[in-house]
Amino acid sequence: MLIKRRRGWELPESAATPEPIYHGRRRFLRSAAAGSVLVGAGGLLAACDEPAQADGSGLNEGPGALQMAQAASDDPSAQLYPVPRNEAFVLDREITEERLAITYNNFYEFGSSKNIWQRAQDLPIRPWTISLTGEVEQPQQLAIDDLLAKVDLEERLYRHRCVEAWAMAVPWAGFPMRQLVEIAKPLSSAKYVKMVTFMDPDVASGQRSSWYPWPYVEGLTIEEATNELAFMGTGLYGKPMPKQNGSPLRLVVPWKYGFKSIKSIVSFEFTRERPVSFWEEIQGNEYGFWANVNPEVPHPRWSQATEELLGVDERVPTLLYNGYGEWVADLYEGKDQTSRTLWM
Image (tube, rainbow, N blue to C red; front, side):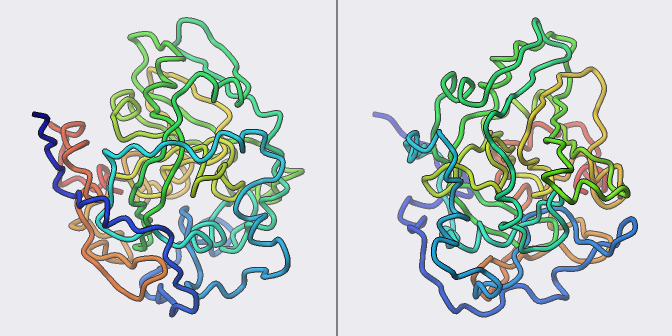
């Protein structure tokens, strides 16, 4: 008889309800909890998909506006979705309403506004080439559709925790990052994976801001990249990934703060040296390389002990590693658990 050992954060599948309709909900994030981050020449918020209001105010409600936000009409991978759900990944909270998750986003390449989804529609997602370079057997380039043909697409229900103390729960589609690592065939000398997003200031006006170290860079250790939870997102809510959420390929690492989940990736470089990430270069004492969720380690300017659920006027306790400790805690054994660098 097969006995499934339920993870400590898991509840039955019935706990993950289909996109609840919470129109007209109250503002979910009070300004005191959001906390602004002043960097460079602009007074800008930290890097994660932060919604402005849960009632959807500011969304263009004209004909087809939400459909445009939901998925790019020029995405030829649309026929691949929806994909089968991996039942090993369940939630302890309701799935966030789709329109909230896709219409209030940070994507600094398109500006610092929280309502940038319209501008993000200018991003061309075909052709889109992924480079696998560095400490690998053979550097290679793959068109995104060729990559999708090589991997096993599935849906996973994950919690997402922003460093600014809000949270959501969404159905990501994509494939385990471990499969991408296997395609790249890194050498034993490769210790890290450096990821880089696109660079096109003609399309993405935010990239004309000289005080940012463009293009956006993030990194993981090889052990993190091959962990069972590390996921490459290609879709959302049973559709191709919306452009504002990181189409056509983004990282999803649910035990870390959201700014680690780099969007619209074009390059994976396998390296001996630890890369310096985008926000680490800007404000390393607040947004470091590791960025693991920990309620006991406050941000320098606000507490991380609780979080606000997107679309619900409710605060809940923040969980260590965002509740995924049973999957990832062993990655950090032997590291100084009291060091701020492990958590911020």
